Image 1 (spheres, rainbow, N blue to C red):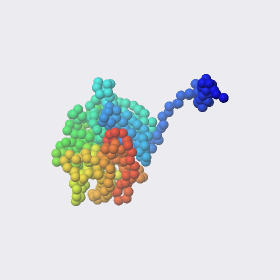
Image 2: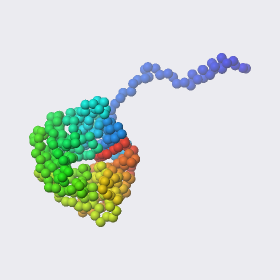
Image 3: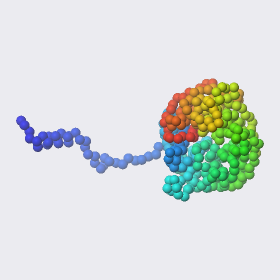
Image 4: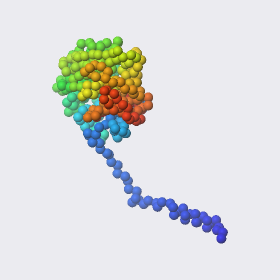
Length: 384
């Protein structure tokens, strides 16, 4: 029997209705409750600080799982914000700038405190708008060992250090450090910090009780910035600083006294062929317990190659003052260590915008075990 067009249409309509899902009622559409997951304060993590150079008003610090390199959190760092991770405290710090129209308007600078479990902002303190809007270098923001004072490097380009009294919750002073740059706090004296100077010395500042004023004393000259400058980055163990020069000379410097003193100096690549030199933005990491300094090294080093990515990671036995191991690496410009029972190294490949995990093996060798794309322009890594 033939069906007319109306009967066919009705049949199709009924069939389609039978397979369509039931329309949800208002009671079914309950709004999802938004929650904030908490990280255990003791959870190991890597902070990968990205200056976001292509949109610098929107920097960020990625919080990574050190085993998988998966992102487990994010902290905004604003316009070229500096990042500091203290030891033994459940906070991280950001010194940053904001403009009401993103890139213009009246600038305001702030010291921000974030909770390490929720990554939420806990407090913010207004600071003078002179902080260095620079790449992320660890010495540009530091804290006194007792946590009372935060130190922020300024550059206008005249240099000074902003001192923030965290107990009072306000800026307590500004210490001029003309011709000098970077902050290296003394471990045994919470009111003392040193700074690296272009004349080849270090200057040590002693704050008064209020953190408002400081007296200064200069060390003897121990390097020539015109002939062999030092990387600003230093590794610290108590009151001992380890610097490395552009040509690969390691300087062991004590800041325990009234002035900084050089305790030892030696060449990294002595008797090694190939003009090997250190390079990068954060070019070394210290395993203090093992007495091993890991350094990013590139071959064919010359004037101006001090930012070149590494081809190898050298393990330097600091007691023996010699190379204990050499390991190949993909291009890397940043190196950091996650301390613990089984320390691991982490690097940044700036070409692929990736973070690398290295496992430390016997004899000073390191082995790449994980690589993950992270951000756009990660400069600083911190392990905690």
